[in-house]
Length: 303
Image (cartoon, rainbow, N blue to C red; front, side):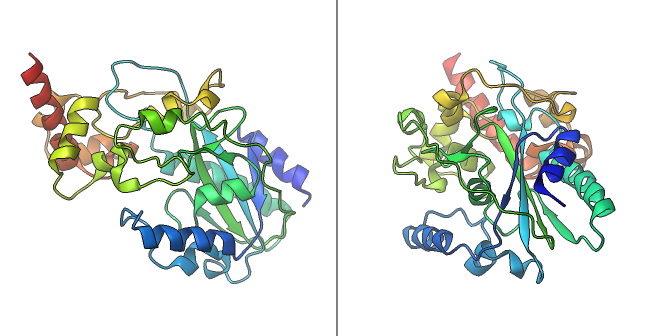
């Protein structure tokens, strides 16, 4: 199959930004990951085995290429929101995997013996690095991948497969390096040299299971976020005048704010049932309620 045909199949499924990453191993990435480990710039949510993060053949013995797709989710601004924009629509894990499954089923019709493994934020490989290698975007100082059409408001998902699609080349474009993301990051997690300390990231802190420190509690109170953080993206000039998503699952039945009274009234079981198809549900009701209580306490003091 020619890569133009692959792009056509993706576009038929409303995916207009895709590329192909080489099969690795990615030794430059290995250096980056070892440096992060040495500096303890880790959250504990990462795959511990670095070899699994740099070599697709440890996922599939006969892997020959990696299809990488960008899934835009930006739908506009909601000022009263207390969750990240990526949580407004249906859970991206569900949506992106289904779209990639549909794409792979189309490829199967034209490539006999096509084998594949689909990953959406749940695989060992570093999805942002794959996006960089495949040319679908370039790194911002905040470590997000920036695309021309949708800025950095994208999900990245990929398909390790046994067909040798021609790999793309990384983009020659670069971040403007205005340092706004560094300046406005509430936790000072963005270090200004394309490195971050994820433990200081407000988004991570809102999802952290361990007991929060006083400084972390203060960050929640000051910023009023129950789950996630968009500040480094909101101030980024690359995210001005971007297009909104055409993926209907990210546009319908929106939830832009989690209600304190509702969370207080429902059980953990009901929370899972009610929000099982939402990206903010994975940590469970307990963490959401903790964050709401912290923010609510701040509001009471303001009053």
